Image 1 (cartoon, rainbow, N blue to C red):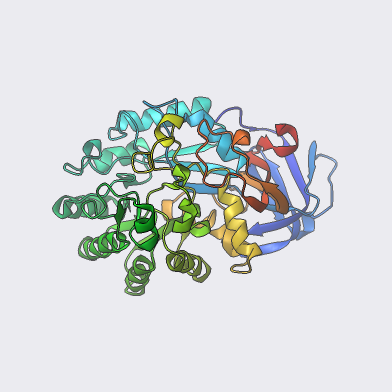
Image 2: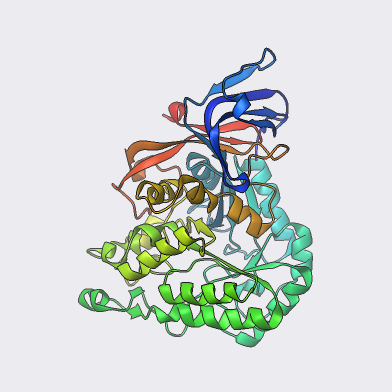
Length: 438
């Protein structure tokens, strides 16, 4: 993170304060001092003070904690043409995201303490938002030998994952979970049976058959979900399903939570807003992992968010170069960019009447902070002044040429949304202002 404001005061007035962590939704104001929140509440709504050098009139818009995206892939190191930490941070800031949790799927793989340190140092030098590294659970993401979880934790890794790869060897995963539990470390899993899904591009069903595309059954996800729940029961490890997308998976997780197992889960924004029919005429920007599901499964994900069974919503931001996406569907790479469309998709849940605005924002703020153990996602006094000013009603259409990511593989090109970030602050510094962006 560059150029943080560590001195001075900023007074936010005339805001609608929403802090899901404190169950706060009220008109008020917020005071920032030395990069941290000094005061917050209704009494600060419009009372300017003589020693306020900078006053931000929020004009009744929503002032909330900066968003936390738990699942972001970048190309740095190794594939900087796809995305760098700097370019990902620019996209994040424009989307109201103040903390990105980056996956270890790079070249080289982030499986050594020195590489975790590299990510932290590189982000500190180039990124406008906070960058939190995860580390690989197995060496080289090969699923065969577990990494040194203790040393990687000391280096700054907040969780351990093989990203978008499933560890198929159950014995290896059991040992890794048992080892992680001794450190209280969080393991993030990808649920997709690698044998059932090998070579598949979409979800098995009538539509896939009509398109003539290689497909895998939706059960390939639930099979791994149920296996991993059993391993958590055996080892006691903290476990987070990085992306779920089917009703069967959600039912299994609901039962596991009811038994008190330390399990949480996320869903990707595109699995909330799109279904298998959106693949249309072989539109490769819709090729994601896990694949887009049936409308019934999409509805289940919406229900899971509304009920609180699904803890967090992620972008699944996975930038791909044009030459890997503009291919026949079966040969095209998986992945979609999503940092700038994450908030609009989540606001859509509120506009559709499925959730309150506070509950919708909880999935992007206090919930991921709790899961990862981060000092973030709240407007509490003393917390870092990571903030987002949101106009929840502003209409706009997504245009790929306006995205700040180096890649343009958005599945939402031309889609109309209501609501997006207007200003983003990290440590009290404004890192994005929509009025000044053009």
